[in-house]
Image (cartoon, rainbow over all chains, first blue to last red):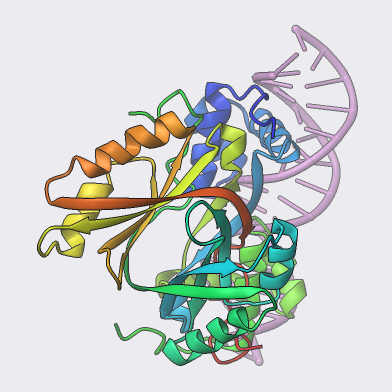
Length: 163
Length: 163
DNA sequence: GCTGAAAGCGTTCAACC
DNA sequence: GGTTGAACGCTTTCAGC
């Protein structure tokens, strides 16, 4: 895991902020904000993409607007050792799984689920529980989302985040 | 919470998928995929934005590449009743807080944190704990991210998600 | 609500500093 | 690394259906 050995300067960081805030901005528009010409911005963005710093551009969608009103975190405990690759294989086909993390503590994996409603959630939970090797699950139902900025706010560590 | 009383047809859904997958696509390009002209796509995207279905466009960034290698979920329990608005007020100024949810169960709030390293995480945790009314916190350290597709995969509930 | 055309921009690349 | 300039394609608006 030897990441971040790349050199990302202040201008790169500023460009990333612009794109995180508004991914469809033109290069010219970003250039005006960071003090560069459009081709210079494009060249930097191309480099940031090929280096894997920027992994893509996506539309933010309100899940509730699409009918996905339920949300939960499920701590899954497996019997014996289950490698991360196997966990991905088990959870990846389940569309209700938004994210999953291996974690410290009693459980092995923390799964972030989204569903249309509680009935749909129960169905997705059963699908997780039915996999071979699942010892137990503990669900924490989300009542409301208080804050959600995902990667927004991240800058190059050491420059500002400690604020 | 009376959402989703809007009419989102199959073409809207397809356009959303296109934009979630690749937010910088041209309207013309999307039009080719969904069988519409560029102006028709633009009109639909404008409508989806003003209806709040699409909340924005953002760049996906690899936090590890920016030096943010640590990640944790912190369950916070408050003494007495703390309304969601107050929780937002307390957590919003902390840049390490990626997301926060009010939850069922023992704790009141589940906080998703990102930090450069463990020392930085400890510092952010202390900032959360130092707020008035915090009775206790329980941290679950993320060892690795097994899956992360955020909103990717969401469609209109009832059409495909149960798959 | 869609299409088609036209004017104005944005993107992209080569050439150069 | 950066800029400029030109070709090409995209965006956006509006008339027409």
